[in-house]
Image (cartoon, rainbow over the protein chains, first blue to last red):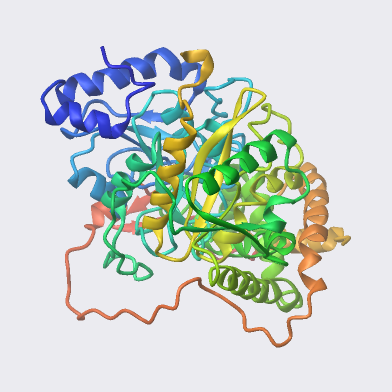
Length: 467
Length: 99
C-alpha cells in the first residue's frame, strides 16, 4: 500500500529503483488519491489518460505548455487550446521519464494569490478546504500537500510558487531568473516569470530543479548554471543568516507567523549559523508598487496576443476590430482586465516616465539594496506570507488586499534572486512558511540551509485532518 | 489618484477591451484605487538612478543563421478559430476602429 500523503518523490524513486513497486502501481496510487480527494480540493484542470513514462509521476501548472494536452492558463480565452509543441520544461520532464499526471489549477494567467481568479473555480487547501491554497500555483501546491502528486512544477512572477507552498505546508523554489527556460510557458511578465518546483522536501526540490534547470537555446535569457548538489549537511556552520528588519517587521504579519519565524531564526543559531540583523530600507515599502507597475505593463504587452485570430476564443461582433475587442472582453476575467488596463495606463503617453520609468528605477534601488545585504550575509530570511491560509472569499472582492499577500516575496523577485519557502511551524493549526533568499545562482546554498532547517524543525507535511 | 471616466474609456480602447457599462464603473473604480497605491513610487527622488529592465547582465546570444525544422502549416493553424486556404481568416478589416 503506497501512502501518497507521506511518500516523498525521492522515496518513490527508491521504490522504483529497487523494483519494490512498478511504475504502473505508483501511477495508480496517485490516480486513486486523485479520485478520492480531487473532487473536494479541485487541484487538477486536466488529467492524463495514462502514464507516458516509467519514472515518478508529476503534475504541471496549467501555464506550462504541453504538446497534445489542453493548456488553459486558467482562462476561458484559452479553453480548448491544445499546444502543438512542448515547452522546454515539459520536454525535460518527459526526457527524464516523469509521466504527466495532469495540469493543475492556477489563477487566470497566473495573476492572483488564491486560485480564486481561475476561470474554472478555486482550489482548496488540504489543511482546511474552507481556505485558499494560495496562488497563483495553488493547484500544484494543494496537489503535493494533499498527496495527489509526488511533486509538481509551478511558475512564479511575484510569489506564485513560494506563497502557495507556504500556505500548504510544503517546499517551493522560485529559482534565479534565467536558470529555467521560459520557452513554451504562457507569458505573464517576461522579466519576472520563472518556473520552479513544488515538493514535500528540500531534497525533492533539488532533484526536480536538476531536471529542469540549465541553458536552453530556445530561451536566450537562460544562463549557464552551477552543478546542482543534493543537500546532505544537517548543520549551518559557517552560514551567515541575515534578518532584514523591514521584511520581518512589516505591517500585517500575523503574530503566529512572526512567532514561528522567530523560533526558526533562533534554530539557525543553534545549528551553528551566524545570525545578524540587516536592512532593506526601501525594498518592502516600494517593492509592491514597483511590482504592480512593471508586471502589469509587461502583461498588457504579452496579453495583446489574445486577439481571436490564431488560437483561443473568438467572439464575432461586426468587423475585425469589434471581433478583437469582444473576444478580449468575453475571454478575460476581471484580474487580467485590471492588470492589462493598469499596464496600458502606466505605458501610455504622458504617464510612462512617472509610472513605468520610475518603477524601473525603483527596481534598481531594490536590486542594489539586496546586493549590499549580501555583502555581509549568505541568505536572508523572513516569513514567506504575512498570513496563514485565509478563508475563500475573504479577499476576492478587494484586489489591493489580495496584492498584499505577496508583500514579502516580491522584493527578491524584482531583484532576480532565488527564494525557497519551507514550512517552519503552525499557527492556529495552519502552516507557516519561511522564506530563504539567496544570491543569484546560489540555489545550492538555499538547498543546504533549507535542508538543515527542515531536519531540525521536523515539520509533518501531512495535513493534520488527513493523518 | 482620481481617474476620470474619459481616461478609463481611453485605456480600455488602448487595451482593445470592449468593456460593458458595469465593467467600466467597477473596474474603473478599482483602477483608481490601485493607481493611488502604486503612485507611491513617485515619492522617491531617483533622478540619478539608472532604470533596470532585466534582472541579469546578459549579452546578446547569436546562433548560426541556418534553417531548422519548424511547425508545419497544419500545426500552426491547428488552434485557429477560422482558416481558409492556409490563411487565418478574420472578419472584414476595412471598418473604422471604434472611437
